[in-house]
Image (cartoon, rainbow, N blue to C red; front, top):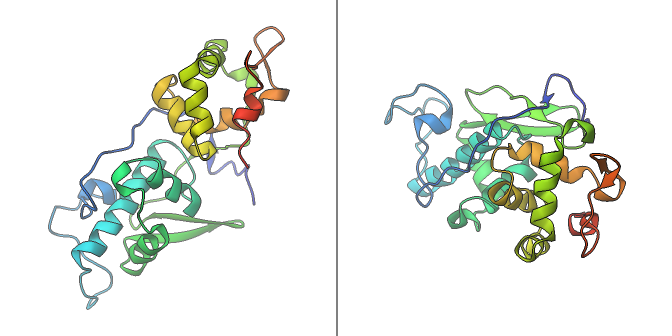
Length: 222
């Protein structure tokens, strides 16, 4: 898997929150990323029947997830789409991601693209966006104030409990974004989480450690 493509990755991202939406909403013009008037959506190829409302809802959930990943500058892989849906709006956590994605592709609302060994997914009128490299970046470029915010959150009882209860690094990132790094894009936060705490120094020789244990252990998801 290639992680350092200069045509895809960049470093600094704007903030964005996961959009709220009703249960399985039909795709909107904004979700499709094009200036399409409501009610004028063309489903699939000519002669292809319009999907059921249930299928339209599944497609809508996928498109909203893609919009979120774009705003957060995260690669639109199937795994990231799934995490975005599962750890975004709670109403959608039980969505059959694979079925929803297959439905979106079948009705030509989402297209698959290849980037090296990676398979990526974008809306039919979208181009692949610039993303934060989750395994890149330099600790020295992250302000000390940011490390301090993370430190203070993780050594707190509430912060430690929230992180330990998270199921993956993506969910841990959403917790940090909501609780202490609201001005950061999730892509940036996931990059920070990938910087293993046990081998990172920030400020003047200080490592990101918790007095109650290594933060690298708390964030060391497989």
